Image 1 (tube, rainbow, N blue to C red):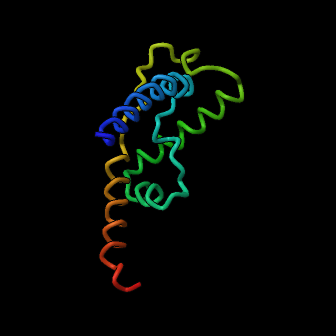
Image 2: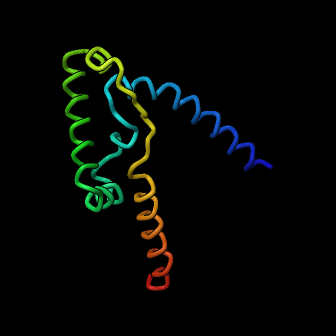
Image 3: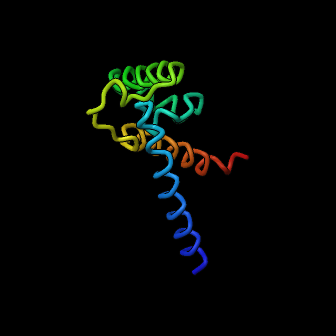
Length: 113
């Protein structure tokens, strides 16, 4: 019962966070996955395994966001009709699979401790 209540509260909070974060990401033309830290092992490995176009797109979006931030402009000033989806997932499944693999490796090798 308590777990269901906690999950419900987290779900409500995450929806509210998404409503606040989405417009900020759209103003710079970023996706949520562009904010993931490349120094995290799972993210770095997923990027190394990802299609070259995906990595190039991520880099270009980051550079564009830096440029727009420096100029204090929104992407909509330059491309008002551009359709943006800030929560589009391209790496999420790969990152999750890599994290599951690492957790399984740790569990299987716990007897060696």
